Length: 304
Image (cartoon, rainbow, N blue to C red; front, side, top):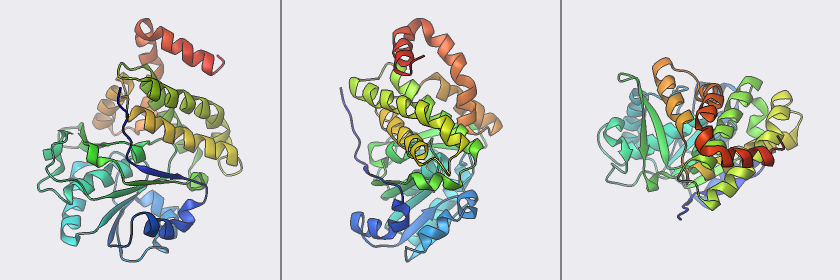
């Protein structure tokens, strides 16, 4: 049994408001390349961060399913700029893109050249991941999922050096998240936990994390959806549930729900969390003969 999580994690409401001092203490000073998207920038979250950080270049062109061409373009900018740090601020798409861009910052070629496990020669640039949704888990995993739009296929680029160096997880960034995205990303986190718990590579450590994640998500997701701004307990619970689910599946695995949703997402550009939510009950029904004891444990845990 193995468990590996080199990412340092700071989980605290309001930590983003002092990100500048935290980054200086944890990482040090240096040129920074900020990866984000236009939605996060429109919400004002990017401005809050930039006000605290000197010497930052911003790339805000990441799509909901990040395309290989976008990552390649950002990689060229990084090679020319030669920053010391890649900062990812956004949902799972942004954080995956940030990890892939960090890889291109130290390795030649295009991102499709590195599809698979540890196909790179040089370790990527250090990444600081700041999730702005409650469903990614990418802030504590070693994988970047990038859509090759020509092939209409989602590539997995992975390696032990691709874990972010630091994850700043601030539940208060959810204050501006629309309810529909709370629902979609929260369901993504739930699927992470359910699949990490029921796949063959699961271990007692990942089971413990998955159980806690499911407990948090079931208690928090509906009230967070109903009142993300007014319900601090739900906001913190769903964000912590998402983080812990990432810690679980990052050392266990995901299953058929994710395999199918990534295929469908690549073909039709469907948001990942929505595809996961639609597919989950059908995959659970298919898996029931093999996974009945685990599903029974989930039912008892959630008092179903």
